[in-house]
Image (cartoon, rainbow, N blue to C red; front, side, top):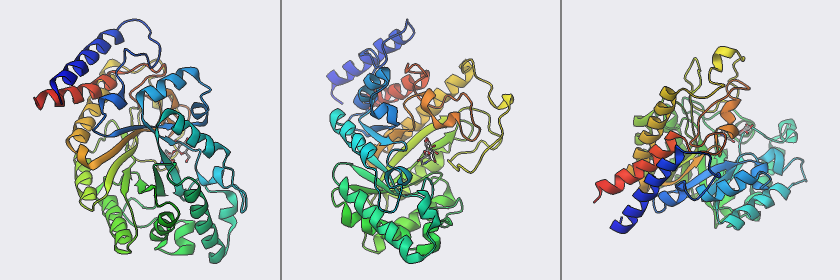
Length: 380
Ligand code: 9MR
């Protein structure tokens, strides 16, 4: 980094830190550093957006989002149940708005997701014969991937196909199309979307067993002569269980196959969970009780700084391997919009993101920014 830009970066961080302790600011105000600018040249910074945010119906969010992020993933808006509700009916209205929003704000769009066992339209679950399922599979991928080719930057072609032990999950696709359905999904996507990056996306694939399954899957796709450009490690972690060594090993092993690594759904839960469970197994549901929801009036300082420390360690690792990483996406714009308020227990108050419920940066945000400044200083 040139000396001049280093000084500018340090000054803006210093200024922002002072301002942050003062009164309320406009969200996304010029005083707060911007993640996308601070990490420019390192990796793209993404966020999951819901329909209200894409339609810019929340004015605070509308200013805040394009200032902080240069990429996004529609949190639900491109899933099969919404886009393809019946055999011959596609509902492109929301997806078209997603494209228009990305174009307006020059944000990279990650399409999410073509093939997933969850959030499927109900007609698919009623399909009995293999041929009809194969027809749905091929038409769904070809129609959607070709319509948005080159308009989305990338697709999560297949999402969450693996069990925790690395074997292929039982799903309607595996049962009716056989174990090769993942390769077939990428083959169809490659044909329909020659100008779009193609990714495999899953949670807990940093863990050794599941990672081995993902590595084997990628090798199988490559051995079939089919294109796969990247792997998305979702990154749904718990503060008591941040697997830094596994994450580093995964970055190294995945990238050694010649694919880019993305962290696609980053968040860190701070709420009690008897299992400290990482991941996103949505069949896990615990009954609500008040002891599982202890911070309704705010996060204690001790936990706030532990969260900041966790994000700091993560970003130190990300920067160390920035040549192998394409994008870091946060799964929610701030604490209020995180799905972790409702999983694995519904109706809690969680604090997993870098920004609080008013869009104000938390200590974790400043730690993340400072990691970059520290790196720049060390390189002098
Ligand atoms: O955040 C999404 C939430 O709003 C939906 O209700 C849920 C439905 O399954 O999906 C959530 O997003 C998931 C993503 O699509 C795939 N990885 C796990 C995410 C969290 O469950």
